[in-house]
Length: 112
Image (cartoon, rainbow, N blue to C red; front, top):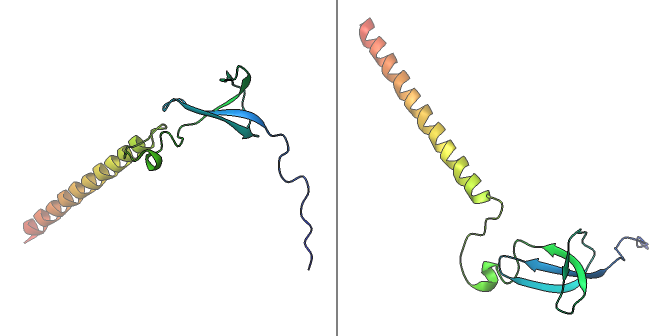
C-alpha cells in the first residue's frame, strides 16, 4: 500500500527571529515561523521580530546545575494555597465529626 504524503503541511514562511530570556539576559537569533508583534534591534544593527521566553538554557536548572523553583505564573503558590485549603477543609470536617460523635454519645447516655 502506497501512502501519499500531504502537501502544504509544513510552514514555509521562516524568517530570522530573536528569542530572548530577559531574566537570564540571554538572547539568540534563529529561524522561526512563530508569530509576534514585538521587534528588537539586534547586535548586527538590523531589527528582527522578538519572542520573549520564560526559560532558556541560560536559566533552566538542568543546564545551570542550580536547583531553584522557576514560577513565572504563580503555579507553586496556587498549589500551596489549594493544598492548605484542602487541609483546612479536612480539619473542619474532622472537628464536625468529633462534635457530632460527642453529641450522639451524650444523648445515648441521657437516654439510659
